[in-house]
Image 1: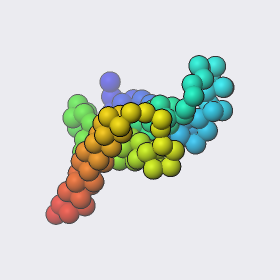
Image 2 (image 1 turned 180 degrees about the horizontal axis):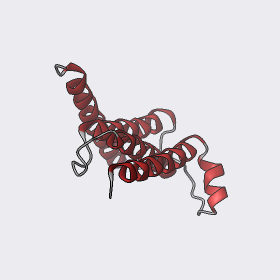
Image 3 (image 1 turned 135 degrees about the horizontal axis):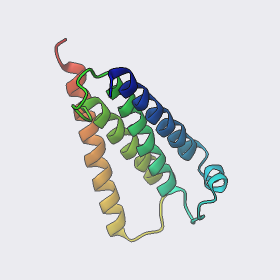
Length: 131
């Protein structure tokens, strides 16, 4: 595959992920209805999926600029996915508390803090690196 085709495929994949991710994050109910997906009592999983897809879309767009064809997901892509996914879970935990056992809260808060913290440490490392 030549470089032009590779970048084109990555761009198409990125746009699809970003559009679907934004729709699931911003319009979860309408997106579920549009695609005929099963309705649950919460939009938690749908919005987290939207955040992950948005992060993947951003990572793909960043990868599109990479000249090393087979390098894979770089640090910038990991940062996008970590911060968007954990940030979305954090918003859910703060704004719309769940009806779940304390153990569930401990697990969600722990995972959220670890993943968000990792993303922020990665971001700080990228921002501070010498150019």
